[in-house]
Length: 239
Image 1 (cartoon, one colour):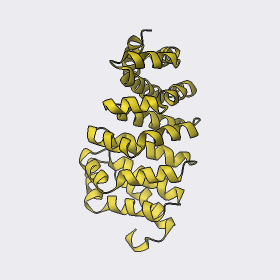
Image 2 (image 1 turned 135 degrees about the vertical axis):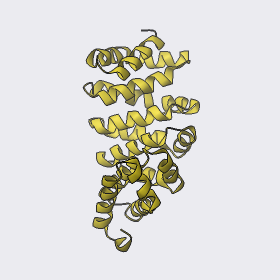
Image 3 (image 1 turned 60 degrees about the horizontal axis):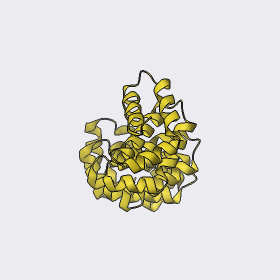
């Protein structure tokens, strides 16, 4: 990739190849140690107008960030900024938005990253992606997953509720009732938002959550996560 930095075709293929080889923990660490993160971030910066490079670059960073050690490297080397840039520059691309939301979801499993992503506009970017691609189950699942991670921070709960997060999650659950991922993450987001806050409990209940949570429970009786999240959500909102 380094020898053909100006070639969009090479950079797109290279980002895709790195994603393909970074499956195991050892492979992720190897890619990171050999400069793979920097190569992907550089490619995304140099080919900002290429939807293919942005989609595959976000996908590669998302996969790499499944490893905690590599996640720190991605954040330190501009990975969040690269993902946010892709979301801003390719709002009409469901593929870019899905991979970018997935990258943010994998990024925000610690409080520092929750704060950092929110400060860089991550909440607004995810909500915007979900609004723009309501029919894409992939965008909705990854978007709900990203919001679920973000609301693990107290300040982010308030921000997600204030910036349209409840509305897009409720719509996602309504539109994609057959998607276990959307239902699980959706229930998880709403449960975290209402936890220990009577005001937000009423807000979530009034958004039409009760029938959706009940539908999720009946639709996925063998899914332990949906059962746990859904039942707790209904209890919290007084249903």
